[in-house]
Image (spheres, rainbow, N blue to C red):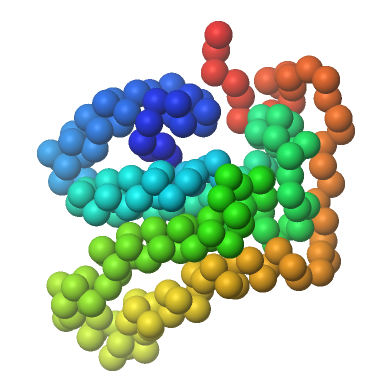
Length: 198
């Protein structure tokens, strides 16, 4: 899905409407297909937008994941947004860091991002989930496979606004090379992800 509203779907060139996405989820449910939904958090989001996503994610049975809009080399947004990049640090191009200017102060953006990820995480990976799969988790632990159970205690160490902000202050050891300045839109043949037909 990647977005809940029409404007963001157009931004990501999804060529579908929100109602078509919701219908697709209904069809998947009717076929007993479990879908993992990814929503792209735009750096332009404010607190209200994060709250809407939290509420929506909790109202759905599907697994919902949240990533940050990140322009990658070879994509149209790399050519169109690179002049706005706040960092060229390779480590920050991981869909968990904002490399474009944020509407909220950066720390506040990360606080909202982590808060939203925590709410979503607890829905499917919290203690309630462990109770539902206790037998499976127990068998895995007996075989030495402890990742799922350990993940219940590690969320705050992996997802932390302090850590994410701190990553921006670390010395850059590998800087990505921005694309050459362009006056016109890139040709579709220059992109890994092509433009929607006109």
